[in-house]
Length: 123
Ligand SMILES: [Zn+2]
Image (cartoon, rainbow, N blue to C red):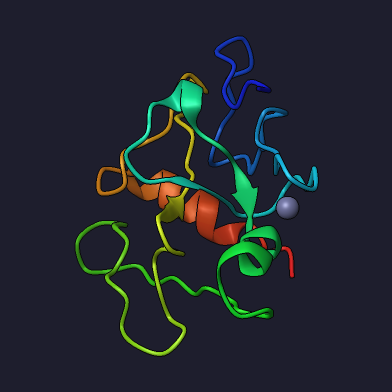
């Protein structure tokens, strides 16, 4: 299992940096939005890009969309159609700037949401 965080390589959201460990474990894509399983220990988790998840889980061509809410930068609940903040049991994977773990689903700070939202879907 490749490491999905590495505290020896911290990074900055504001600088638009992407750590080396932030990579799709199925196709190797980097600098795209990645997803992780909800409620799993970091060591056991998997990072997957939207195109790979789309092939695995949902309709081919599914493009998840996200919105900021009035509550800081928290994810919104799915609002119908294809607009969703999760794909199956997968949620946005946002590493801390220390790159030592991932933020909990509902505790991602605004800077982390902005960082993640700026990454392309990869499709
Ligand atoms: Zn992939």
